Image 1 (cartoon, helix red, strand yellow):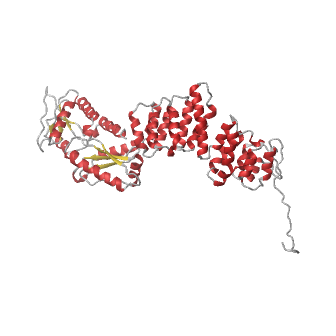
Image 2 (tube, one colour; image 1 turned 45 degrees about the horizontal axis):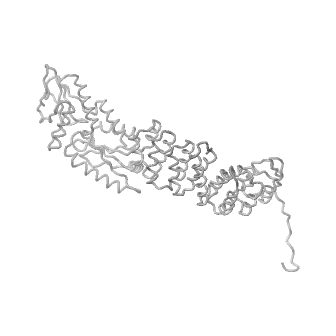
Length: 503
């Protein structure tokens, strides 16, 4: 300042806070409300030094709310002063403050700079059991040194417990999830091993929680088979969490589906069913002339979509493929696949030649509409080849006949494969079928004891065969023609149940 220059007016700094030790209470001029005081401190509207001096000198109790309010504002020197003072004798309030504040602050460079190194040094010098608590304070910081200390402590405790079953593992349990939160790939085998081994259930559950917290960091070839094995565990809570974790993995539906064939606890099986995303279905059906689809197929598709909570489309073999909307493809991406189900009863030309072409077309469409990995296209065998369908059909026709003579009629087929199938189905039903006669002609029907025979047209929906058999004069008087199979309640319910159960 130049000589003779006027000196600026010096305004004395008056701290808005007067920190005094009054038991567990902090007094503020003009405001005795503790919560308001902590908010002012947290927002940086009070000077820090009186608080630091109060904590170091013992005038301010190191309560968790005070430490939490200071956590994001201190520099390294202030942190070192606090940790070297009597305020850090008991780590419990520090842990409470860390749990409250660190999740939101731990990624900030200034917080890392202020706290990580002082806490590492302080934890290394602490004695047990306080050292374990300080390690838990440190754990939100993702750092190889923190992970190394967690790993060493847990390995030592695990080995001691294995050698001496009376060892109390309770102080170590909070550290197991925190090791997973460090997301060091080398810890995946350790956490998975501890989850699977016959150890105390609390230890296994804490280890699996560690697996969950670091899930995205673990190598999938190691993680997937371990979780699938754990889904069969005798502990239903452990097995259920394993199912949940599999569902979170990339292409999780593919990893969940093998579990449907395994022996699971009933509660776990129910959880698996909820986690499985049903794939959209494309029901391939015989259309009528001009591509018309009989109404019974539309009703089936609507009921099935409601049951599966997934899109169901109908594709007639005699019409252009349906236009799948954005919802259909979104469901296919979630499930990882879409499924073609041929609702065809005989292995004719459509099954042998048209279906492979349809599957290729849907595969190309899936690639074209893909946002990321394209969903796969699964193709089920045609309906008439399902053994349980054949068995159910035999039971249905025998129940309807009730001891009367009966016959079944099918579309004319050519080729060795088709004839072998017809011979097989004849054995299942108990008698050979016969091809539909020419228009105006009558099929050869059995005549036993003068009873009117029953005729089964082998078709799911109204068809030319059924219509021709119902024409007046084609069948002997009093003969009964069964309706299309989808109009028989028990057959429709059976098919709905089987289609609903598809992946």
